[in-house]
Length: 172
Image (cartoon, rainbow, N blue to C red; front, top):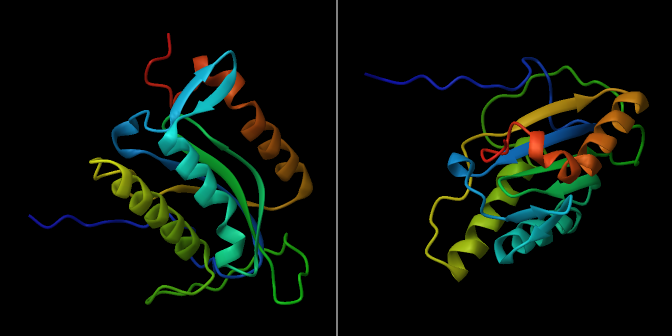
């Protein structure tokens, strides 16, 4: 039996064009690899620090990328990635051109793949954990300032809402 993988990306959307994106990447089997939430604050362990450090250097590897709010949680990472045009113009344009085929330098999938690979490489170097990430990631195109503000607040409040978060497999 051959399994068919379906893309969860928006059809006919060019993820290499300028835009702001909310992303969420989950750990394999939602394992709490990155630390714990205590007193409504995320307490990063060694692996969580690796995930955060790799996140913070994304703009050093992609010159047209900036970062908005982010948080490393016990079993996932939320963040805002901004892809600018060459002139650092608007980030709210909604590109619609689909590009299939080879990885596209500077595209959102390439940025996420590079980030996940860097975290995996660093954690494997320090431990015997082999699988870090769940396949794929969630993304949402941020289309205006109102959405940006709502998502920014969501990310910042994530540790305070951990007890009721659906990603928290230990919630009561």
